[in-house]
Image 1: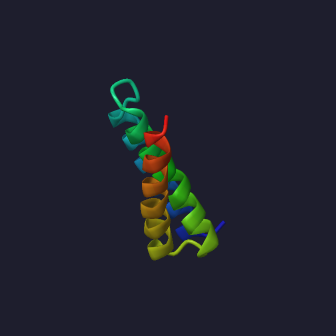
Image 2: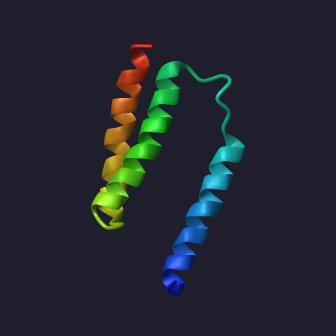
Length: 75
């Protein structure tokens, strides 16, 4: 594994742990939960499709958050 890949993976893991520690699902509405889940899935999908580009990751997270919010509105 390349050193840059290892550093990126470690940074993403630390960010994920910090975000998980600061959030709770208990007080969130279904729209908020859908938005968070959609942004996470969209970010991963955007990164996978574009080969890890920052623009693809952010774009995927934005689109996924919007879609997740709309799906959560119906529940």
